Image (cartoon, rainbow, N blue to C red; front, side):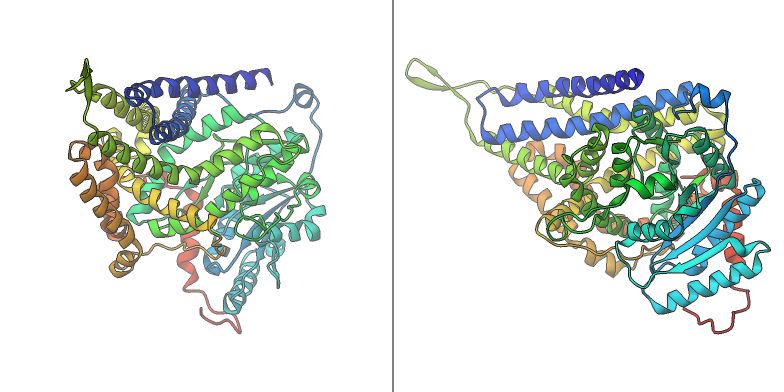
Length: 598
């Protein structure tokens, strides 16, 4: 405990000190001729947002150090536990909640996981598909796929399927229903999404870690993004492979036993979960009241409040999921997450929660609140620049006014911009450095030259995408605060190229705002126009950015050129190969009696 306290205070000190250093040039610019409410707003917004990106920078820096030194951040068993291990025969349920998902992919993924567990000599695993599907045709197809899997597997008697007639509580209610009916039969459960994969080796190791750590209620394994071919998805998969490990390592190093839960690809102690993770309904109406949508953060906080450990295993590997295939699908998912995370603002001061859990809630809220704050900062900064330009600088010689020599703040502004860009891009440079020094990481990402080119192109793409996401997230936050709620429907899993008319309709507002703001800034602030170009370019180019990034053809071209390569493409990945083999055979399988095509 003292060690983790030192780490956290060091992290806080680094964030605060770097923010104070960045505040100095801003303060020196705005205080020259007195302070106005607008200038104070700019200063306050800048301080909050710089602290936010500084926290991300230092988190990635700590993660890079952890990976460089190969520090094991996962808490292990106590000394007494290691000297006198208890003999256990732990039973584990692998549960997959589904909601109107494609049944062939769902059951093929489950079959691939079972094959991998069999190779790893895993025993005492049972498999559950927990359906909340509302479409009768999909529901019938799920049952047929389950029957087919049980019949084709020699040991398929431990594969179970359950369909709920009433979707009370969404996914968390689905898991609760499983625990109430079957939870007493199992020591642990591993929660997978419909697009999740976990290797048998990882699953067996997770059970062992839970056995070795009797105070652990949950161990989260960060998933690697794999399996999609659109250009956008390939960029996300590459980013996950290169940048993700540093972020996860830094997070685990600072969290210790106060970790978080991401809703899937984690093992959970069923007894602790059943006893402490019943979710209340928030008072008031949706979107900020009613059922808790982002249940995972809350469940981790409830486990911590009860005294259990919540851990992360960033170096364990063998944990995978598929990314959204397009920017549109990613933003649709963000809209649901935004509503769920904003609900957490009502739980930050809940009685009995640990401080790390409260900070998890704050960070979840800031993930989306940061966008409207950035937008406010840009608008307020432009307004302040305009009003300042209208004031003629004068001084007095006796009773007579004379023009004063203008004060240039170019040096301060350049230093400020440079430091902000450094803070934003340094985590990617650190991750690139860590990957470049590892021969295996270089090889599975196409070699040093392709690795560096891919990171450079990803930085360019993310720079253009950031303003688009900023506008979309700002609209999400505004609409939620105005009382507009959203459903929690099925996600788009398959690759698809978006039609141009659809992209134009969806992103015309972004483009109009970007072009309109560009003309306004160029007309009213011609001297400062270039300061705003990085933000204005992405909004103005939103339509081609979204359209071309959804292209499967460009994604495959990037693969042929060796760009955005990932380990599953270069070195192969057994469980993904198994999934694809099962899916390729599926079309040739005979239909079961009564089976209808979807």
